[in-house]
Structure formats: structure tokens, C-alpha cells
Image (cartoon, rainbow, N blue to C red; front, side, top):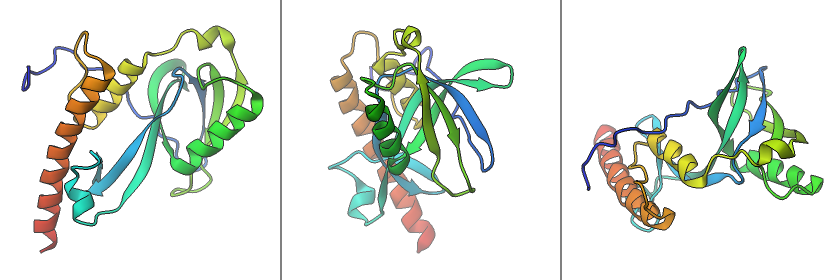
Length: 187
């Protein structure tokens, strides 16, 4: 029901790779979860597409993507979201295709950033087929991204397409509120 607070949400931290740092781990989803975002009020909002107030107001959008990874963090292996720019993802996807691997699941990676605002470079190192079968489902991965963006999460038995429609409506409301608030701030 609309307005109900979910009992449990999938919360995954974002794997932060700062300048000079190297992160390693394995990708545990088959494909990237990608969409356009707007930068409003010092944070990003998922663009809902056709009904987007930010697009109508001329606020630029950029493509953003996430993969779920099991990252080596300290002495533990933690599930995290790894954020990719369009350039970073296209490069990773091209390198994976060059290896002849069917998808991203099970790809061991090394990620580094040469400078603070530079592109995150994600290099596929090897592929572990035993890990390729232990993937996070697409709907659970989207649930983690929805939580990050303050969107409703899928409910039990709901199709991904139906959830996307609900999430898009919610994203439209959030973007409209943020666009209006930013316009007032700039006036």
C-alpha cells in the first residue's frame, strides 16, 4: 500500500575509492544498474524521464551506474555498491567483452582513481566462475539503489516492471520538490 514504511530495506554502502587508493573485490551482479541523475541541492536525484521537472527547468543530467560488489574492506569482504560513470562503465564493459566473458558476475576487479575528480578506472583482473553463480538478484540490487535514492522498494511478488513504474512516480515527486526548492534558493 502506498505510504507504508517497509519492514526491512536493503542498505548497502557505496564503496568510496579516493585518489591514490586501490579497491579490490568481485562483482556479484550480471549487469550494471544505470540511469540518469540530476544534481540538485547538493545531492543527486534519479531522473524519472518524461515527467521530469528538472529536465523541464533545464537542469543537466548525467548517466550514473552501480554494480553490487563484494569488496575487500579492511579484513572483511562486504557487499557494497560501486558507482560508475558512463566512461568508467563503457571501459569496464569493453574490457569484459574483450575477455569473452558473458556478463559481469564473478569478475574480480581492481578500482583506482588517479585524482580527486578523475574517472574511477575499474580493471577486470580475472573471472571466478564459481562466484558467477552466487549473484545478487536484479530486484535486490535495485532495492539497494532505491534505498540509496529514497525511492520505494519492490514488494514481495511485484514484477520489476511494476516496481519501476512506482519508483519513477516517486522519483518525479522528489525531483519536482528539489527543483522547486533550488529555484527558490537561486531567486
